[in-house]
Amino acid sequence: MKNKYLQTAMLAPVGLSLLLSGCGGINISMPSLPFTGEKVRDLTPANSTEYQCKGNKRFYVRYLDNGGAAWLIYPDREVRLNKVDTAAGKQYGNGIATLTINDDGTMLTDGPAIAYSECKATAK
Image (cartoon, rainbow, N blue to C red; front, top):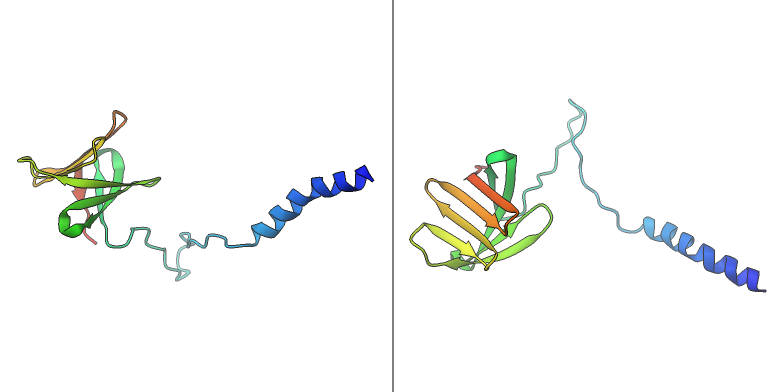
């Protein structure tokens, strides 16, 4: 009798994973072969501005509260930055990350490991 319960207990996770694998997959259009007519999906977050920086780095910014805050969108996470009063142009920060936007270019620092420089907003 123990064998029957042991077999069922061992097969249950396998059956469950098979059932769940059919549920809600991700449907992302991948670039297709030339001349197929398929459109490539735009991966820019809605209502955001893309910034391209030195070293082919990029991030997106969505402004909130009429410019009172900026929603910083990295490829792997998102962070809210509040507007900071400064003479160095528009600046947003949260104590760790700082986004400075001025006429010469945009700069982003996020802790000691992340630094984006010479960033320019891309036109869509």
